[in-house]
Image (tube, rainbow over all chains, first blue to last red):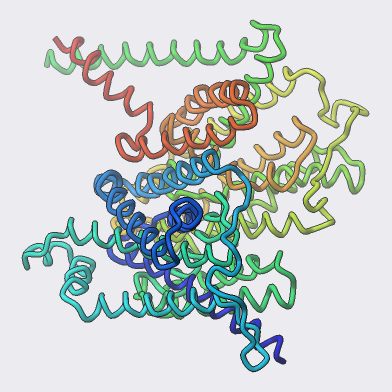
Length: 287
Length: 336
């Protein structure tokens, strides 16, 4: 029983990190109807920023988290202005190919630059594991999970309660009407891409504290992000949050009962099932 | 009056030129292996044709219907595994596996296609990736199909139907005939009501639907045809190399290869995939021989950059650039 509880807690903690990077993906998707296939690669870059931040620049924990978020924010804005802005006007084929090509460039550049070896941050970087009422809690996972949850909630409140959030949602709702209200859609969309990148970067830095870093890690994390945004619903940040937690839980439970090899199988199977029975997800508008 | 006759004359001339070009193209591919008598070029030629086959199969769903499938590798893998599985289980000729692989691929296409083709294109792309990864993981852990080790075909031929040849030339002509079959099918589809439907769907699904095009049904049909041909490409790969494992059968990069070969030449154009294969496959062979093991990484960086540039500047690919060039320089001169 204690073991099961342990598995559930671990699943929810990793799930809230999934929720964080997926909410960035869903924000851009809901706003511009574009899916960033390179989102998993953004998370991978965040992990490497954390790794280099710690080992080369000796940044503290808060320092490398901040660095990952800022650098990936800049990358997101750059990708928007250099690529997405013009591709948006093109056919669907171009929209999908553009970020898919970006995925290949980022993944294999990292592969060439950093090699195929797994690297990891020191295990006790955020402190040791604690035994709380029979459940073993490792400090990095708790810090990562709680931080991710708080930031995701913060993102939700930023979107629903602040002026900037209203502007972003206004552009998402109706680009032309927003423009007539004096909002610059271009700027809002660039900020959304920045936020999306920052969420991936910060999530990457958080995962890096307990998960091995490698150039190809974006492959499975990117797929998880697709599953979470589809399950949560098109463009819904609260949906992504709920779905992220559920996916983390399913992953953890299936790894526990059937072995780690099959944890992704259950998640991808759930994805196909969701598309069959509820394509607009938990909280999304009907597509 | 004079205007129309001049135009008619010009289009007749264009038709003749087109026919001559087709003959030159056909002769080139028919005579290619005979003109070198060099195993390296024979091998390269057969690889180019194989890439053109799978990219042409992808072109039906991705190019003509505009639905970017990233999961066509599933059909490639099914087509590659079945012939070798049938050989391993019963010692039968791998040829029997060809139709079985195609049948299974069509079934998988229906299973993926029905839920996802109703939705917008991004869902379809994501779902196809997820299904491809799902099946790759399952196959990697399934002992019946060799798990992570994979399957091997016949080492020595008992008779011709084992499809084991020392030289690449028999494979070359086998691939060439399959490619012609696919291109003829594509041409016939493109010039039928089916083709008009596909073009309408690609241009705008909502508009197509409002004009009475059965959008979901025809997307599913073309996905099934694409699946069957991709499976055939997988079967040909398996008999040529006599070996298949999860990464060479179900690796996502196989899908990437199909997409970039088609998109570089011209997605949704009959000869686009062939043009893309003629350019990219020798390029890939060169980078691999120059950079060795690190070449693979470099190849995919290059591939990614090419995809981004195509998407950013000319989604129509090289054939579209050629059209623009002809319009600007050649036609302009003839109208003077």
